[in-house]
Length: 100
Image 1 (cartoon, helix red, strand yellow):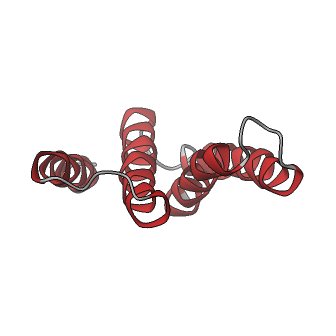
Image 2 (cartoon, rainbow, N blue to C red):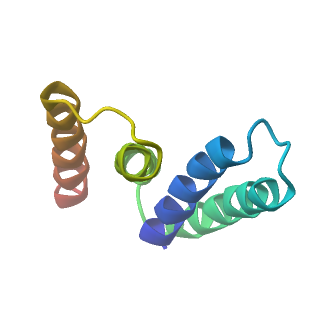
């Protein structure tokens, strides 16, 4: 459930960029639906997981996925420092999940 929630987290974040300030109908609808589904699946995940861990993993995957898609879809920078920070986010997610 948490992984699905995180994927929708990435979806709505990318959708924000694609909606161009909510001026494009399809990306705006995608953003809103992704936002709602992200929370629905997060609500389900926290029934079984500690809230602190679930929230950190959800936002971490969301942030990492958004950075990756920003690089791939929008040509955002992919310099070494930025990629190192991305690796640290992923390491933190893995660490939290392993200790829960």
